[in-house]
Length: 78
Image (cartoon, rainbow, N blue to C red; front, top):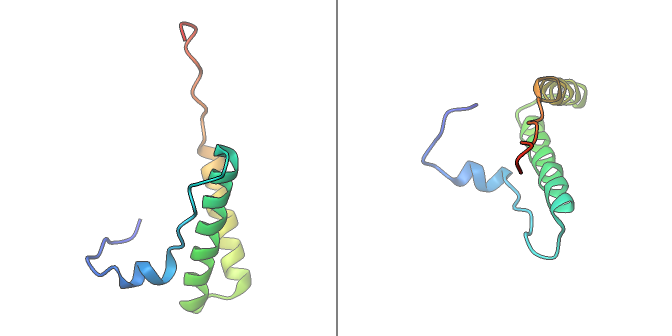
């Protein structure tokens, strides 16, 4: 992760809040992911990355997250 700063102006430029009301949990989570990806792409583009570099970086990151995902098994007592 990146260094945390006290200056929230950068965050305000790139973090879009997803509305919490009137959405089911699946739609809400998908919306948050969608907005987060758009915000990340906007920041990457502003930093000078090309569309191809952005795509490769995000796909690599998402692939790593999925590859490392290990679902928890539900307890038989629940």
